[in-house]
Length: 95
Image (cartoon, rainbow, N blue to C red):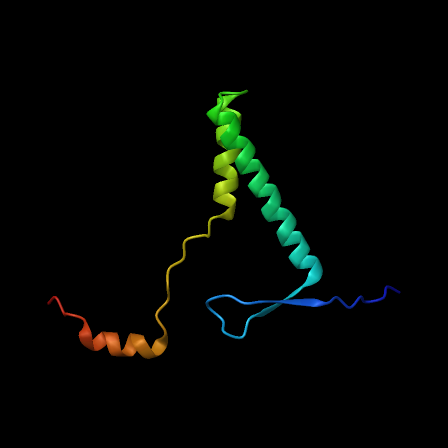
């Protein structure tokens, strides 16, 4: 039977949650490796595009795909139930 490992957690503070978030150390290391690899790919792509080295299409593809990977997905903000009820009074009936 496998043993369960206990990992130390890292506390990360962001602007949305005042209390912060707990992230396990392996997840944090994975995040840092991914971000550093993306940074390297973006820098190498920009350098090669600036100096016209190699295939223009390859470096453009790598640059746009890494930028698309790190950009957040667009989301529609949902209105909570409490606000939906109050907004019904403010809508104009077009009859």
